[in-house]
Image 1 (tube, one colour):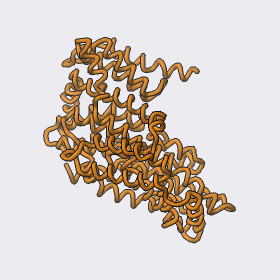
Image 2 (spheres, helix red, strand yellow):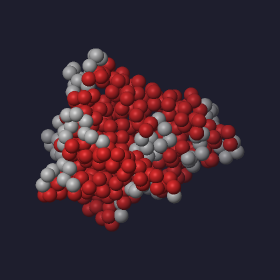
Image 3 (cartoon, helix red, strand yellow):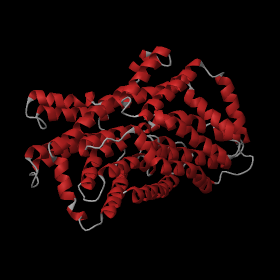
Image 4 (cartoon, helix red, strand yellow):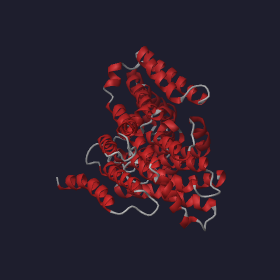
Length: 468
């Protein structure tokens, strides 16, 4: 109770404490008051004394009530509701419904089992089966929690007891290997596609409103694929070297177990076939690009077709709490982030933050900002909160440095979002599930998180050296 009370008072204390301080030089009182409200809201997002969507709703409502962004009542109301008119917010919502189709149709589970049956006769093959399953699901699953913890983990946790029922040591090593591989790979795939992680879509909107750069689905994928595919291919092998789950016939039973599970599921159903076709349709529309169809239009069209074809029922969509929750949550975050730019706070930070970096070459400054942006995630239990709080400031700072290409720097910051989830047991949605699975000790998780986090960051910095 005491902890809950502290978490509830902290956002208020942060907001009021900042309001009582005088506005820094060069910043208006209105902009400072809005930042104080923004900081209090972000504190609530991090500590979660109430649900994040409710915190965002309260923050926007208070800002509109006191007209911190627009001096007119009507203008304040329009700003408060502006997030619901944002195409990116509706793309996030639609992508959550698309992921629901994978679940309801059983297609996601079937893909995972097919991979285990095909290449899971050896421990290393099982790791690659997990990695490929996540990679196949990631373009249309913006919740890595649903993708990895919800779809793949239930399959993974059944494998060790099935293939090594009499050996606790083998079960522990195999379970640790599969769990860490699944977790680390989903962090990589979350960075590979714009639609593989919900905060990616929020970041794209912040990039557009902060520096006027529009990141497209195809340019995002093409820019990160060389690094992404390399990390996906290397992660099972690196995890294998750490856990040493065996190299012989220890897991031959996994393929047989997967075959039995597939037999129990029955033949490939009409719903699964329809869902697969609609997934390909969505990907084709996104690859075609904005000149043909807007990504949100494509996603909403596919959602409508999912209802018409019976992949999901309208009642399923109405009952999909996560989708409606993220709609409200991200709509309010988009409005708050736009408010920071509108009141002049982001521009003020950019002007003042570039001074300490003036002595560095542009590439050195960019690498330093990328590293700090990545490392500061240890302070956050939510990638979304990290994006809302830190991305506008770091992005504006980098874009204001002569010699740094704003579009490429923005893309690199966005690419880091999935990767940074690997660093701790609270850094991203699936982390607590794998941390609490019993396969990984506390020491293992923190140690591997640090090691893989460094490797992932080095890969990102190498990409930065090439493109900047």
